[in-house]
Image 1 (cartoon, helix red, strand yellow):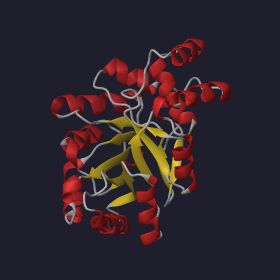
Image 2: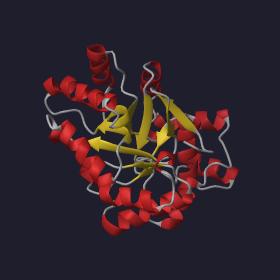
Image 3: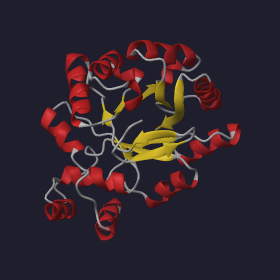
Image 4: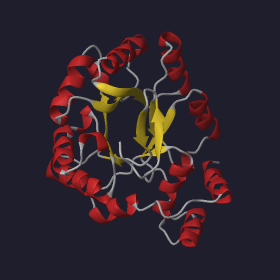
Length: 260
């Protein structure tokens, strides 16, 4: 992957861009237009899911962007109601996306029956071993649930995608991921943030950027993957324009403290 933006290394020598584009609720033509705008703005990581119902539009936008497939990192996710139909689900995702593999496949939510947890994880590992996906991980998992998978299979999820923002910052949870070699990926970075918070507005003014850009940069400087979503071209471009500044150690500490 030819990238001039920061990435994090996943098992299997897979490089995942720290900035991704979230596509939840971006469906139909609006979804296609948003993904095309994101790729045009410089995003090289697109996050979708079977549940979003937009894999076809995402795949078409990637193909029509003029970028090479290997230069775009694509994530999709297995819904909780597809337990026992994992292989069928990834094959349907690949058909919709128009590709022979995704870069990351996640279990979208822990299965409702704990007894299904390990079998589902084994199916993801099998899909990775068959090159249907380059890396596998989970979403919305607690640390204990991560440990259960690791103990049963000796295979750590590459990624855990969870709600994350300065106001949700939890130093211990952050460390628990790092200690296990699991990349923390944050979703809904703005929904859980108060962009009018004086700490964020002060730091934004110091760098001549917006509070939203500060929130994204805070993720990046923590080496946390972040996937802002928007269907507005100006906002999509602004969210990608975070490479010309970085936060000081003191600013990072001040933002971390918003997590209480």
